[in-house]
Amino acid sequence: MTPLIADKSHKIAVGLSGGVDSSVAALLLKRAGYDLFALFMQNWHDTRGTLHGDCEWEEDRFVAEMVAKKLEIPFHFVDLSDIYRERVVDYMFSEYEKGRTPNPDVLCNREVKFDAFLKTALNLGADFVATGHYCRKDEFRDDSGNTIYRILAGRDPGKDQSYFLCQLNQKQLSRTLFPIGDLLKREVRELAREAQLPSAEKKDSQGICFVGKVDLPLFLQQKLEPKEGDVVEIFREHYNSLPELKSLEEISRPLCYIPSQGKVIGCHQGAHYYTVGQRKGLNIGGHKEPLFIISIDINTNTIYVGEGQSHPGLYRRALKILPAEVHWIRPDLTLKSGDELECNIRIRYRQPLQKGRLISRQDALYILFDEPQRGITPGQFAVWYAPDGEMLGSGVIDS
Image (tube, rainbow, N blue to C red; front, side, top):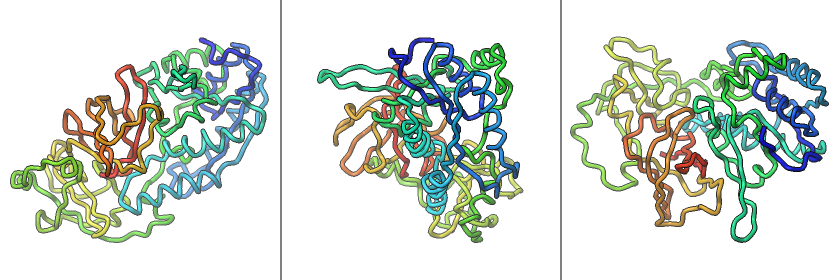
């Protein structure tokens, strides 16, 4: 393993989750001779709305303890569930209530793993925190002698997790290590098997970070009441009569519909339970092709749908990010009003990178894509990368 920090007297806290990735991160650090300890965090107690209905964290903690014992490193436990509920889950409820679709994993990294958890580790004597994320970090000194930290995509294109770290800042990165960023997933599994780690065959976690797989409407009903509304189908012919959109503001907005432009074909139990691009959960038949949600009007509690994956209502050339929601991992590269930047962009995890241009204006940061994008979703994060794979910044999609 390439040395992550030159001075091996520094103490490292490994965020041990019970999964194979964090276990191998600990294994590599141990083999390299670093002084380390394991820290497991519990972030969720409530099982309402979860599909398994049990406390999966208990099994995760047991496996994490077994890994720490196998590697002969100290094991610590911290309960951050109150902070997680306040900063992640309450944020989720608030965003869904507004008709937006949040990304809790991004928030969990920004607010919990690399904030509250990091502070806990430092209080326990750690100088750095290491995690099992598939991404890479490096650093350089600028002309003024300041250290600048960079996040780069992981070597495994199928597992690159840099997207989930798109809201980290320079201070957080200065204390963070990613030991498995240069490995492929199969290599991580092989290392775990060779070392006979208890997590070697453990399946990857799925669903909401630390909550697990959920029945989303049931989960959201903890705070968001059901409210019956119309499902309106918008037909392809409607788009042939639309005026040409020219300004950045116009092409970045979802098209607004009124029921008279389509046909009421069913009802739903709350627009806040759905998201743009969603296919399942409508339970409306009578169509040759599947129905997809193309727009949501939270004010009228109306869901607009279109038939077929290629329905024009699913596609747009641009999106908008409000100034307060723009985050630069590299503040030295921040665009000024009037500046533009060619870059690669993704609007959801695992989406192939899309070519486009950042356009900075006084009122917003716009992203103009070379090709129309399917399912641009308010509340999700748009992330932009340099050609060499460095992640430069991100922002919450406003429209």
